[in-house]
Length: 360
Image 1 (tube, rainbow, N blue to C red):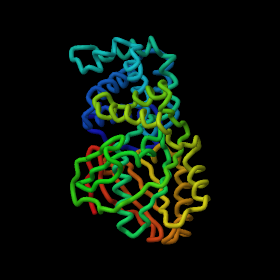
Image 2 (image 1 turned 45 degrees about the horizontal axis):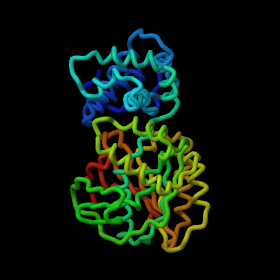
Image 3 (image 1 turned 90 degrees about the vertical axis):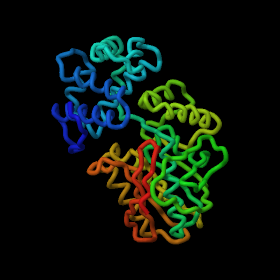
Image 4 (image 1 turned 180 degrees about the vertical axis):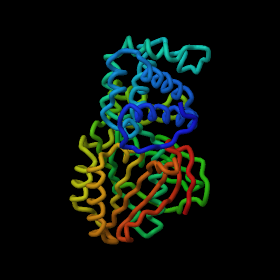
């Protein structure tokens, strides 16, 4: 397996692409402080490369889509993790404890053989990687937009909302290099490690937040919540704490999520009347790669058409925290109208909200 991850053509298909997707995922996990997840992916990659029989491995070997864009290794790793979290496969405990001197491949192979029927559905959709820490990036971007003169009241629209954890961003408390936003103490409190100047300080307000997902997750359903937890890498314990806090918040008042694709949602929302004195914002994080190219084109066209109609009283903004697959970093980029609609790189940020390198 490769020692370094290097993003290749996201649309590449075939057996070689499957092998490279596993190699990249293993290296990425190891570079991201997730050695246990790296070991699980390495065991899965070894089984895929072997002659181990089974329907699950057969589907992976003959994957019809693009394995990197589809996050194929993490689909199966999520399923394996769910077996551990639910206690359905006790043999996995020593692997998730990080124990040495064990046969990772044999353990994972046994888990697959015993639970193949339960694991097969995990191949049917991409990982749901909802993470509340990303909301700090959205808030920082809104502070910057307010500093540009846009109304400080925001109507938030999110695509790829998953369980809607980031739709609850108005319930959280943020300390962004000393700039504090949100209720105190807040359902969660985020203080990312900050580099660069602090964001501008403004009394912003989230007036509404709606989102969409092709397969929304209901945090109040224990089975669906377990599925979401399974996609969290076990090394990232703080993310499990945040997930429990999000579950508690959703039980009080669930986030507003529509089961619809990104393009249909954006087109419909932009067609609605916009309240004067409110900045309408499209936002998303680590989701654009999962949006089919045709839908990406429709979202972009709809935003640019709406941007052309935007006025100072009814402005439009687009906040995206997505991977730059050339630099291998996640970037916070903002466009707004009126104002030209040119993209501004505000920050490079950790995908789970641990740190922000503010660039403006």
